Length: 372
Image 1 (spheres, helix red, strand yellow):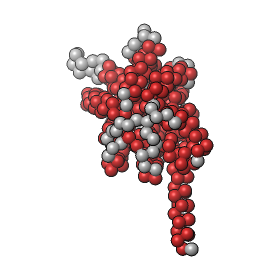
Image 2 (cartoon, one colour; image 1 turned 90 degrees about the vertical axis):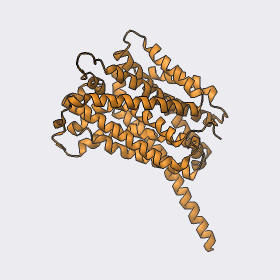
Image 3 (cartoon, rainbow, N blue to C red; image 1 turned 45 degrees about the vertical axis):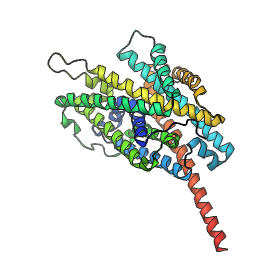
Image 4 (cartoon, helix red, strand yellow; image 1 turned 90 degrees about the horizontal axis):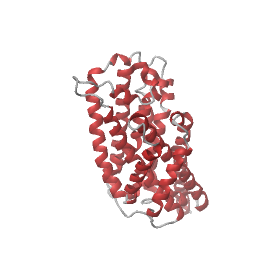
């Protein structure tokens, strides 16, 4: 049973997923990929997108086998009640970690770049409260706000790229594949972890009213997200070269290159606006999934009473998982990438694999019964 009677379109779901993946990646991925891949830093997002394609396939495949059921619900039928509950519990343990980290990174970024004298709790608490209000209004409101904010995000990001064209040095692309393909594959682990967040489809597909266009919309979303990552990496490479991995947020530094005449300066405020729009959607989406998944796990008919307590729990986790800005930077590293890939790729792939084996076994038994 769905805990929300609202419906969204496949296009709205694509708008929700785009910033859910890109909002935090766009600021952090350039430095990470430069560290591993050097001047080939634009290639890792392409390799990482394969993981995104896999998670999209898993989500849509589960929906075909168990229509109108989230992964929390279908896992009970696939694995049995008790193992299914343990799988659901694993997701419920992971989601506050993820949301807490997103909230903390948002707070640290805003505090260091825009509001240095504002207490961190106020910065994070106000965003969490607004997202909780958004989530409590239902999936339709989350979908509509995502459409508005993602449109603004794309327009502002496009403006930044256009204004930076005059500063670019494409010669930074060379030497191409100086150290071979292995460094680019190592650099792809971080983008792959972000692309694995496409597994949110497995939680949200049952709320989509036009599932016929689902595959096309999700592949389109994946292509746009991949292109945005590649273009962002290229712009950072063309502007800063080998210095890209010296900064925690290279895109913020890139925006400071923009100076047109003497009146168009301090464009980094647009980057902050892009960050706020994207983070609002990302926190809303994952908080919605956390609330509905928790309600499903406990067998509740309505997720809304869970929203504010779980939002507060995510805020608590934002302090528990990170002790400072350096801690946030370290947590978005190799150990966090493995943790994310295990929870969002390996675990759902295992569930889907068992579902396929059960289906094959069921067909073979039916075929055997007919022959006898």
